[in-house]
Image 1 (tube, rainbow, N blue to C red):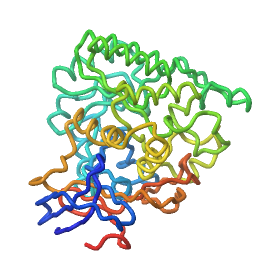
Image 2 (image 1 turned 180 degrees about the horizontal axis):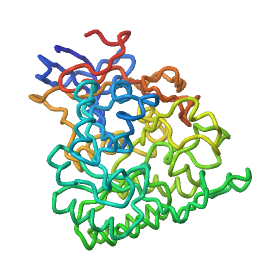
Image 3 (image 1 turned 60 degrees about the vertical axis):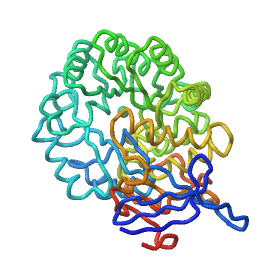
Image 4 (image 1 turned 90 degrees about the horizontal axis):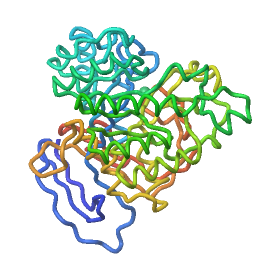
Length: 419
Ligand SMILES: [Zn+2]
């Protein structure tokens, strides 16, 4: 692919021209400011999301590697890590290879599969972490479920440490759920819903951090949603414990006062209270939270049609992540644009050893956004098969025009870009 794009702005505000020849970036040269230049197009390194559910193999009525990876490209992503709650669960070399085969055949961006921590994600026997490391698992997670048993988690950490791999934990204590399905806060009380207490998340994080201290494993916490989680991780980092964490756009931009009686507001962990949301933003600003991940979790329309009580957990987010965060955090002056790009690209890339730099001599891996035109989030425009998002109807800025991965256009808007 050859490409010549003029007057692109980098996150730091500088203006450049970009040349790609045969899929390689051959020049990024300073451009002169032109007073008459309308509109502004930004050039970013490809975004990296370490937490997505692409649903294949096993659940292709929700999403496939083809549709999910195209949705990622449409959101500006060149690298994503896919969670293992699949059928078969990638808990062995053979099952991981089955998923990798589909990725090799259908993915339009780089998809890095997790291996599961336990066999079948059942929490009872350790999966073949050594074999799956050899076979290319990016790290290990039982996402969708917490590892309940302390000894099992410790054994997993010791093995992951030995293999030089990371444990990526969905922290949830099943004994504290008590049938809850949204945050145990004002909205649940006012509308007679069963709540999930915050301790069901921060309790297991606190447990794991003790085990991380004992084992020395590299540890990453998925989708933190509570103020206590932020504080516990802040303290662990101050002690020098090898921990990173992520949160998602919906936890940063919404609180439970914004819930509605619809399945598109239901995910696990749930959208929490106002103080939690504020603590998460503070965690982004002081570096306690290392990265933003969407937990893109598509389901069929039918599965999301049963309100807060009966719908399945999970919302899509990969195609609205940049726009909602740019609009809600950058345009409002809470977060700088360079910091947002760190959180969406460079930080996850560094921690997980994935992603590719935006630099001359490298294969082209980048995304181009325009941020001047306001539009309304409309799930009908998504490439994802999943349409349930709490951001439906929000007015946002930040539209992807082009995503290039490995020197090839993975997604582009033909009305804006000629290739
Ligand atoms: Zn999870």
